[in-house]
Length: 64
Image (cartoon, rainbow, N blue to C red):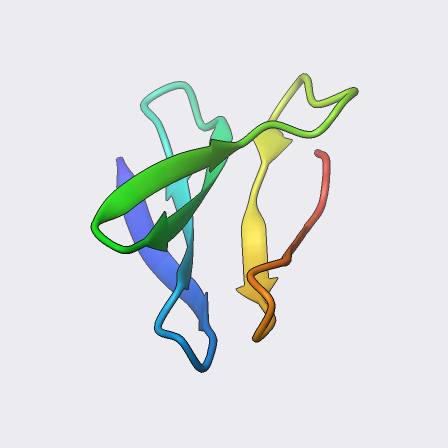
């Protein structure tokens, strides 16, 4: 399993990409001590990595 921060915004929210043992990506937003998984519609196959976060807390990512 691999976990990496991929972006950080001004109020210290962090976008995180995690790859599990089946090589599926899971995107998370870490904000105020809580993790929220990012699950866009249509995400299947290899998942949905979070790649960045802006100063409004909007997460940029993709569906694999």
